[in-house]
Image (tube, protein in one colour):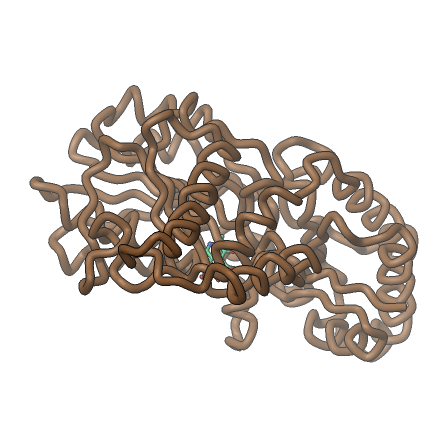
Length: 382
Ligand code: PLP
């Protein structure tokens, strides 16, 4: 038995995704910008995928989608691309929970003359709305709020955030990093008035190397990559057609009805039974404020890395913090922003599920975690 429970770091491409990619490389390998008829099929593939992405998030009718190399690039295009096109300088406000793909791009925007301001989180990892309201000044040009936090699974209250924007700075753009929420948590871009939304293929069983930015037609956007002028001049470079074929298949195949929430609660109950000291980091896992697929829990006094490696030997893969920061020897910035005590932060593991796990795998993972915890807790200094 094994259990890959690090799906927020990346997912395994499905057979259908791999078949769609192979078919594309065999039959539709043409350059989508070429003029001969054979290339038309490649162009249709791009358009079919754009439409599928827009439909999935209820984008406004005239919204556009640009393909990028990853979620990070989509976030950077939304932030640097928009701010470069803004006539007036001002503020960019982002939440303390944002992924580095957003946070670092906002900090870079300071070099363009913008003021980057971080909005605090509450103890559940959700934006502190009163503090956010106070930070939204009339000269705010851009607000960046993620749909789902990659470490805690906190689902940001987009209705309330969109309401604050309408009240305090209606002309500011609102960018949503949807990398962890896309397809897993419903999203209505049009109803919320969101101006741009970033997503990434490899989190939904498509391959690595493909992402997209969906944006409202009215959003001013400059390219951040220059060259041959593909993607209507917004993202030069020949499109990754096999990756886009995989992304399209992944979107078509993703099961809207799935068992992730039930399985997450099954996992939580089983862990609680074996680890009385277990602590949940994030919103109530049964509530809509918690994404169905992410569970962040602390196993004090056992250090996260020790337990992670013990589980790895049993074929159970889990994350400690986000994948890109897990090699840095610090506790998670997100847990710190939530005021999670240091010892709890040091023992926090993230289990992230996908629709294709079985109950047996979930129970196996929890059983192994409890068994290792029982032994390891005796060796930790109190
Ligand atoms: N945003 C969030 C919330 C993420 O979790 C990630 C990746 O983990 C990214 C952005 C970056 O996506 P990519 O790995 O496709 O660059």
